[in-house]
Image (cartoon, rainbow, N blue to C red; front, side, top):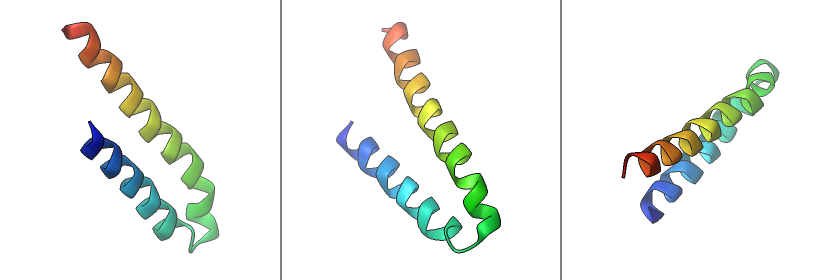
Length: 51
């Protein structure tokens, strides 16, 4: 679980580093982070319901 959190933080930091360079990608950054966060949260709850 700790490793998954580290990869999530690294992924978000990488997206910020790449997309912050351009105003066009900066406008898409927030929706991408929200989609990633929602995917992780829903995936966590989906695994919990299967157990």
